[in-house]
Length: 437
Ligand code: SF4
Image (tube, rainbow, N blue to C red; front, side, top):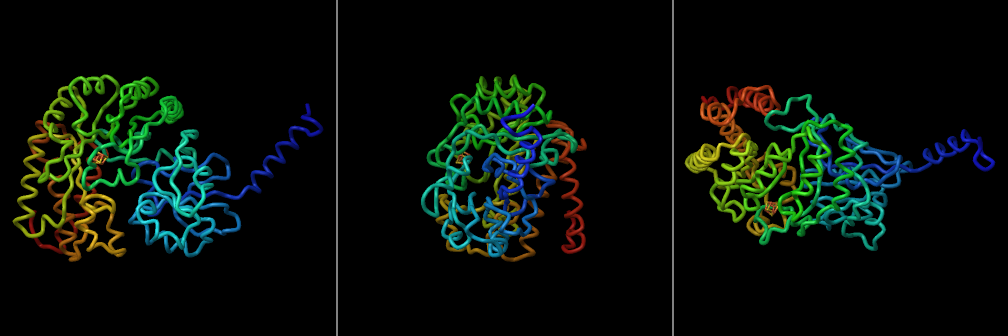
């Protein structure tokens, strides 16, 4: 059977030829994605439809003549890697976006055709705007390009996740409405409004995720429960993925008993709350203890993140005071998971004003939240990393945790990761510091 004067075989052949002739659009992230850790990269939300689009994990060099565009997401700690890569490619083909180009566009002028500020999910509409520096356009038309990435590599360090369990993630909104914003947080710099995805888009995405049979889904929204219709969103996700355990970020001030009960009956297995710096009181955390008590009552786990300001813990006494206070808070709140990050001063935040005089491009590589920022002494830097690990380890292995929270030694990714860290620090500790734990 023919189509006009052409046979199906001819049409297919011409179609394949056309595909081969289309130039490539390559998505890259700087620093390069560690494909065995974390989640699928956010740039999959930016990449356009089409079979000429690829996601590249190793940031190798390419022949510019085959490529139409390089879509590069650049985070602060990847700036150096990006500039080395970019100087070997045609800047007229490079589009940059992400936190660093949003806040420091001037640092990308010589490397890129377009510098995209803020979130973006419509690649062509965004780059067709006039000027070198443009705002990202969100049109909510396209599904994230998960087909370009091996989702089964996703790992998350969380309680009860076994290494072979599949985790996926979804964004149902972007940005945050908190006024004034928390002084350390860079989210409002990327998007200072809460922009919800149309609910039918959330539904389409959830249906698309069914094919992975995920054991866990992480709702990546900065503050899911800040959305007026978050319950409808949660209900849809739970209906479409009824056997998938959901975890999400929320701020304590958006939760109460009725909301927590709703979460518990709609698949929510864990809520991630930021305690932040235990020496500072944040507006969003005034009811944190009450909220954690309600989560426990409703069988929802708590993931409690905290921030360590390295400049506040210099000296034995200051360090001990800080970590003693932190340990007291752990015992008071009894979260299933704790996670520490070193404070990083982001441009555009209130904190930046205090720090920017000390931050230079050589410091960018330390913006990974696991390195104590602005601490130049390498021995002190390593010790600070160790103590951040050590107080979490002590909590997980304490009698208190086993009796009142859960069994740590379970072979899940949380346990395995902490064993890895323990073995890593044990070697350094015994070899270099000659101190007994
Ligand atoms: S920490 Fe959370 S609540 Fe505070 S500004 Fe950032 S996203 Fe908003």
